[in-house]
Length: 627
Image 1 (cartoon, one colour):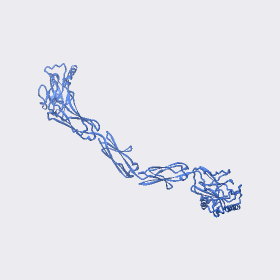
Image 2: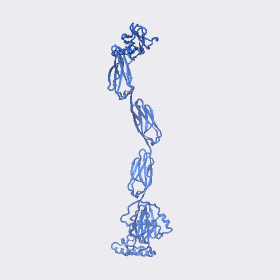
Image 3: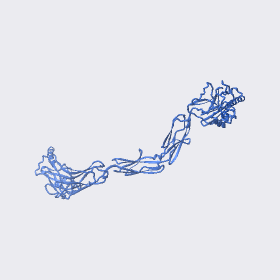
Image 4: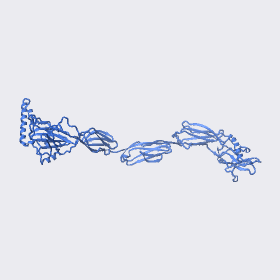
C-alpha cells in the first residue's frame, strides 16, 4: 500500500493542474474463490468544487451508468446493495482522503467482472469514472507453461496464486515431481499496481520420456479448508530419436520389395524416402512404407528414410542389392600392334554378385582370374606368339557372358637357322625358312630368283606366319681358286619394319655320308669316295644343263648335310619328291596358288647376329619379291 501513499500526492498535483475527474484502480485483479479481495482505489475531482455535505461514493458492477441500474456493490450513504453483495463488501479507504479502496469477501465466480466507482460531492457534482478494475475469480491456481517445451532444454514452470486478501495468505506445493531429474524449487512474491501475486517455480531438464507425464500445483490457506489444484500434462517436443527401417535385403532382378520406416518424435515428423538425391515418397505420419515393383539393377543402391519434425532431423539407410547375371563384357576393339609394344587389355562388365573375369587366348587361360567388374590384362613387350584371339569370360552364380577381340602382331622379317643349301642328286637344293615370303639371289650371276622367274624350279609353302621357299640349281658352277665348286646363294626378306638377308651355307646330306659304313679304318677311303661322288654329280649337272649362264661352281668338296633334312622332306611332301620337280610354267601357277595361302604381317625384331648380310659379297642386284 506504500505505493498508493506515494502515488496520491502526485495525482493531486496532476488534478490541481488539469482540474479533471480522475480515478486510479488496478485494471486487472484476481482472487481465489471463497476468499476475499481488496480493490485499491484513489479518485480526484476539480479543485474548484467544494463538497459542502461531505464526499460519498458508490461502487457499481458491470457498467458505470446509473440509469441502466447496474448492481450496486457498495454505497456509502445507505446499506442498500445488490443481494449478491450483501454482507460481502466494505469500504477500506477514507473518501475524504480521496481513497475509495473496496474489500469484497467470500467471493464466488459470479463476482468476476468490471467494477466502477462513482463520486458524489453534493448537488450536481456527481461523476462516474469510466476507468474500471476487472476482477477475476479463480477456482485453481495458474501455471505458466511455455508455448513449447523442448527436450534437453532447461524448463521453468511457475505456479501463481493471487494474494490480495489481507486475512488469508496462501501457500504453494508441487505435485508428481518424483520422476523428474533433479528438480529445483523457488518462491517469489510480487506486488504490482497494489495487487500481489505469490509464485513458486519448478525448474528441471525434460527428456523425451517425460512427454505426457502429469505435473500439479496445489494451493492451500492455512487454518482453512480451502485447497486449490491445477494439473498439466507435459507436451515435450523432441527431435526424432529413433528411425527404424528394414534390414538391408537382396532381391532378384524383376521382383518386388517393400521398404518400411518408423520414426519416434514429437510432433509427428515428415517422413521421406530418398534414393540418392531423389525423393521417392513422403508423408506426415509416424510410419511410411515404400513399394518397389519390377526392380532392375538401376534400383540397387542406398535407400534413406528421413524424419524431420522441425526440432531435428534423423535418418537411417538400408542397402538394396539387386542380383542379376553378368552383362556382356566390354573389351578392347581388335587391333594391330608392332612387336615389343606393351598393352593393357581391359574387360569390364556388371553383375551381382561380382562376376569372376577370366582371360583366354585362343581358348587357353592367360593372366589371373579376377572377382570384380573390371579386369586389366597387362601384356609387356608383346611377341609374335601374342598374336591371336583374346576372350574375356564373365561368370557368377546366375549366368555367364563373354566378349572377344583379335590382336595382330607385326614384326620385322626373321630368317631361321634351318635356311641352307645342300647337295642332292640333281644338283644343289637351297631352302629358305622365314617369317615372310623369301626370295633368292645368286651373287655370282647377279640375279634375283622368285616365283616370277621361270628359269628355275621355285616353290613356296606357307604355314601361319612361317613360309618356306626352295629352289634347285642343276647347272655346274665355275671353279674357285682352290679348284672346288662354288655356291653363292643369298636368301633375303623385307617388310615395312625391316630387312634381313643371309648367305646360305652349303651342306651335304647325310644320305651320302659313307663314313658311318666304313668306320674309322676306312675313313680315308670314305673321303675319297665322297670327292669322287661330288665330281660325278658335277659332271652330270654340266651334261644336263647346257646354259652356261646358270652354271654353279661348288666350293667345298667335303659336303655334309644339315639338320634341315627332316624339314626338307616335309616340304617335299608338299611340292614333290626329289628329282621330280615341275618346271615353272603355266601349270606351276596352279600349284603356287595351292601353296601360298597365308597373309603375313610382321613387327620388328633384331637381325640374327653374325648372319651375313645381303650385301656381304659386294654384289649389286635387284630384288623381285614373290607375290
